[in-house]
Length: 144
Image (cartoon, rainbow, N blue to C red; front, side, top):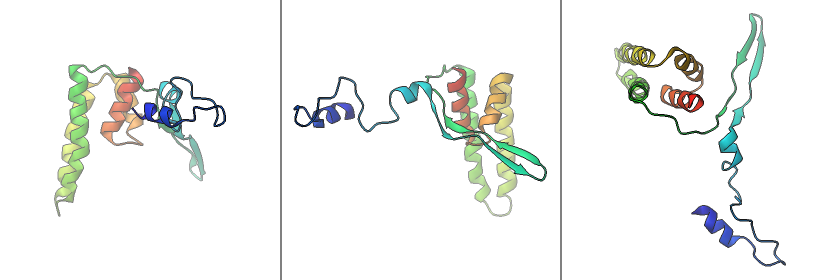
């Protein structure tokens, strides 16, 4: 819809410039090639320290593909969401932190049980820089 509006607003006479070709995107850098190929938001960073060099992973948008949703993947996604929402329990005075940690551990054990080892390893890499739900979604997009 927005593309049609932009094409109508684009200059159509030769004095104002040539008309836009069909399917051209004006002002929408996140469409087209970037969605197919992905792009990096934050590059990989190496931080020297007295204890050795630390590597902070790059963070970006992977090529967007619709993931396959199996029963196990849907259940793992529910548990990842439960793990993220368990942090709300940390707001309870005195016992909230313990309750939140227990709930998160229970949900992460279920995610580990439901995912194959290669997907779980990718999930652990992604969860370092994103909440569990987004990390699992990024894992599913990367694995197809």
